[in-house]
Amino acid sequence: NTPHHYKVEEVEDEEPLLYERHNLRSKFWVTFCTILVLIAVIVSLIIYFSFVQREPRKQYDFVFRGGTVIDVVGGREYVADVAIFQGNIFKVRDDVDGFGKREIDITGLIISPGWIDASDQSGFVITKHGYNYAYNKILMGVTTLVGGEDGIRSQNEDGTLRYLNTSEIPAYLTALTNHRISVNFGTRYGLAQAWLETIGWTSRTPTTSEIQKMTSLVDMAMKYGCLGISVSLDQAPGSFFSTDLLIELVKVVKKYNGTFSVRLRDEGQGIIQSINEVVRINQISGVPTEIIRFKVAYKPQRDQLMSSALSVIDRARSEGQSISISLFPYLAEGDVLSAVLPNWVFSDGIDIAYQRIENETIRNQIKSEIRSGLPQWSNPVAGSGGWDGVVLAHSFSTNYSIYHGFNFSYIGALLRQDPLDVACNIILAARPMTPFAFFYSIVEQDLELALNKSYATVGSSSSSSMTSSTPDGLGLPHPRAYGTFPRLVRKYTNSRVEVIRRITYDVATRFNLQKRGQILEGHRGDLVVFDPTKIEDLASFESPFHTSVGLKFVVVNGVVVAEDGRHTQATPGKKLSR
Image (spheres, rainbow, N blue to C red):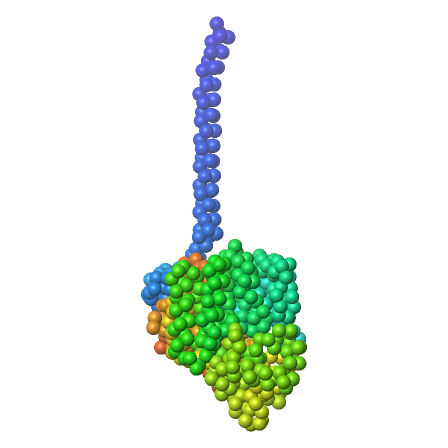
């Protein structure tokens, strides 16, 4: 009995001990798992607030306090603070909590989305030196450039320009990424590039295989990231394109959601026919279309043609077509002096054109055609009311530089030469450069009629300047290069919100520039702060390189690039592609 009793007592003593040990293990694992869960939650919260929310713990890069915000979509102005953090607009509130590394009181000032230049010609200079401050653009409030108004070009060592081959575009866009620029920059592809690459500088009907090649080149350019395509039909080689060929090439852009920018074939007496051509292209292709450098360049019929021209566009838009216009707020066009010559002069290339205008018989023919006109040619001399309205802007010749700023009737009288002979001699003397002229062919009432249209946006049709108060990269001393946008805001606006919408949101939408053109939380930090009582353009035809006043801050991608009219030489600009 004793051994049996001993065994029973041994079992009775062991069971509670085993149970207690099991209980301890369970409590340990429950506690351990609870701790792990808590750690996971804490880590998740840290990750969420640090990397997803990117909350700056109430410290922003800077905060604009108390400014009047332009709501371009809502159509209103309201007072708010705007906080910038890591390149973006982080908060737009009545009273942003926390503080910025820099607090800026802008009470009484206007804070607008950054202004977008819809017709820029900086493509060849923006990548030239490895950096570009775009002084003139920044100092008139422009934060984004839509380049390629007439294609993508580069500058040769002698200062002349050449169109890039389509295969060169990737390297060009890579250079934009690697270079330091103060503005955002995207570009269109020029149909002139496709023509010259396929056919060369000659006017003829392309073959089926040549049309296929041009179509392929347009497709390639859009795949590379171009924002759209462009062409100037008023001058060679753009004038070589037929309407039917343009339709085929523009169709390519539709699948890429791109835009077609076009300068009219005739901006003078034949402007209605030229607009009808664009309406047809838009109707068949279905591609959003903008008419760039829009104007009626024909003083003899002032006040008449503009109303008729706008009516054609209004009617097309009422039928659902997407057509808009872009223009600059000045009464004189700045263009190549060779625009005074009919397009046939250039039908076989530049060198042949030089030979032609050296010939006295051909000069006499041109004089006759200027007097009588030609179909599908703007004839800017007639449009300007004669040679009195054509002024020498830049001759690129020491022999003629003393005549800068004088009209050709006056210069001709001084030299005892016909104005056309003077123009031809200046063109020949400037080789290989291209002289410029001002054409006073626009009247104020026409300009106001066009700017009052809700579908009108603004572009400077100028290039960037490397330094302050110097000519733009083209060498064209037109005040639009320094004053376009402040002039628009000061002079041509019945509604400040509407006019700012046209140079911000409307352009950003047209070219699919994502997260730009509005002051919204999460959008890129492109901003302009200005004093509405002091903003004014000071550039004039007599003094074209004066910077505007009244601009307090210009911000690109969350970095201040100009303050109180001084460029900070910051280069936060980005390459923009479709």
